Image 1 (cartoon, rainbow, N blue to C red):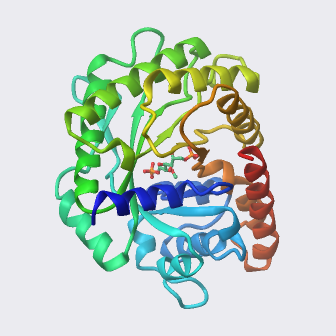
Image 2 (tube, rainbow, N blue to C red; image 1 turned 30 degrees about the vertical axis):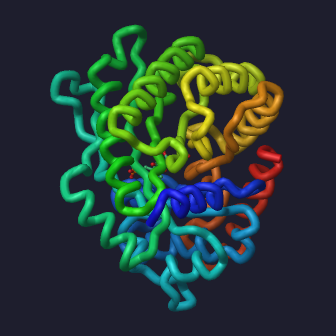
Length: 333
Ligand code: 5MM
C-alpha cells in the first residue's frame, strides 16, 4: 500500500464532524471498568459491552473510526455479525491497539515504558490481512511529579518506541495513531503540564524524524494541558485551550494530517467543554491540522451508568451514548 492510500485513511479518520471511539480496553481494563459500574465481568459480558456501543444504530454519523482490542476482532454482535464487518458496512474504519501494555521503567520504576515491539510485524500482518484494520494505536504514559518526573530517559525511551512502532505500521500499510499520554494524576500546575507536554511532543517529533516516519501519515493522540487532578484546581476551558494549542503549535509539523484528543479521566462534560474551547482557539490561531476527539471514558461513562449490564437498559444506554456523541460533535463544529 502506497503512502497515498495511507493519507486517504488518515483523511477519512479526520472527516469533518466525526471522531474516533477508543474501545480498546484490554481484558483487564475492560473488566475493571465493568466492575466499577457494578457489572459482572468475563468474556460474554465484555462482548455485550462492545455490542452496546458498536451496534448502536446511527453512530456512523459521529464516528469515523473505532479503536478495538484484539479480543473484539473475533467477536460478533447480537446480530451474529463480526463487529469489524458491521463497522465497515457502516463506513466506520476498524483500528487495533497493538501495544502490549505498560511496565515499570527499570531505572525509574515510578514511570512506565510501553511493551509490544517484539513480534509486532507479524501481528500487524494478521490484523491487516485477516481483519482488514486500517489503523493502529500505541499508548505511552508520561508521569508528572513536581520537577522530578518525568525523567529525560522515560520521555526519550517512550518516544523512541513510538517512532519504531510508527515506522513498522506504515510499512505494513496502516496509519499509526501515536498516543503519548501525559497523565492527569498529581498535584502539578497547568504550567508544568504544558511544559511536560511540549517536551514530550518535541522529543516524539525528533524521534519520528530519526526513524524516517512519514509525518503526513500519522495521527497524534494527545492529552490536553490540564492542572493535575490533586492540584485542587479545575481549569477554565479557555486556559486549557490556550495552553494546549500553544503546545501543539510549538511542536507539531504542519503536515500532520490530524490531532485527536484523549479524555484522560476528565468528566464527560469537562472533556466536551475543553474540546469546544480548543476547537475555537485552534481556529483563532489558524492551526494547520484538523482536530477531533478520540475518547474512551468520556464517551462511554454515561451509557455504562445507565446500562448496568442489563438487556432491558440497552436502548436507554444507547440513547445516552448518542446524546454524548451529539455534544462532542457540537464541540468540534
Ligand atoms: C480505553 O483505555 C485505553 C487503555 O487501555 P489499556 O490500559 O487496557 O491498554 C486507552 O488507550 C484509551 O484509548 C486512551 O487513553 C483514551 O481513553 P480516555 O479514557 O483517556 O479517553
